[in-house]
Length: 429
Image (tube, rainbow, N blue to C red):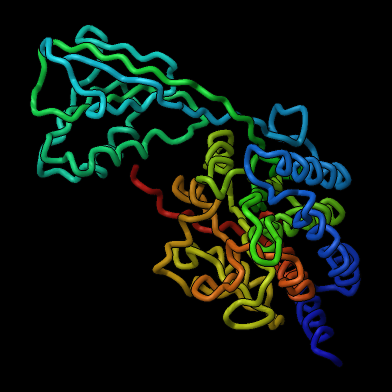
């Protein structure tokens, strides 16, 4: 018996009956893995960069695959695409006075989603002072998170780091209450400010398919991966200019598509399953952030986020790691359902890289959901990570297929409603 047959036998014995084993082999196999992966990582997708045509082609392909699997639309949507807009405020000008004296424009930073922002002492702005001893970036982040109208007076001793506050002028998918940061030692009795921006609205879309549960329809289990990548750059010495992102994260998206088809054919889910291909992970995780605002985290039982499973893990074949393994019993449940198998889910071996909060599981995990990422990527030595050489030829299709099978089998207790992972401790924000 060769090694590939040993892998298959071990996983299928964990699956249970011979009929079940035959079914999973028919639905999850290396031929199908490669078919989907080749499309997503093809040059035609142009690196799947956000706001570029290639990512729309990828979204259409994923939606077509969800349709083939007979999945339903999410919530009140009328398609598989969960469309939303990113709001970018492009700075034009800023001016102001305090106690009748002009404030230099370089000492004004407006964080706003309004084209024209005007305020004075009668505008109802809360006035906040950040003194010389405070950690400017930390305190500013707290104020931005509050999402209330604020005039923030920053002590001149903070001048060295003041311009770094422009990082809060990042793209957003929601309108925000404006905040004006002003570098000054004065607390004004009168003031007047104006900031002008060009507001750009840029379309994005997650792709979501739903397989309703039978007896526990209002309890959700999520299988996800991000389908965006880095796009096109200048040609390298070999003339290649496309970041194909075969492993990052066409591999995870391939798994989501295949699991959607598998579970739709098995029809053994008591809980409702959501299959989500997230957009904009590479530019800030905006797709998963938006999605997390459209679902009740208290009804979300678990999240299997799948990221970069195309290469062998540090332990070799038949293994993957789970980020945040120690934060819930999610990993133990998965491994328990693989009893009799040689496949192993291990704790994250790269704790210093904080991977638990660096992928699309992060937003729901912060809300208490046992949301974990499954990966094999050797983050300390992964040769082709974020390079032009992340192509399908660098992936192990057979091993990747076995990982997808392992995810399918290991999730059976959760999707059947018989097992429920413990909640993750919420982040205080």
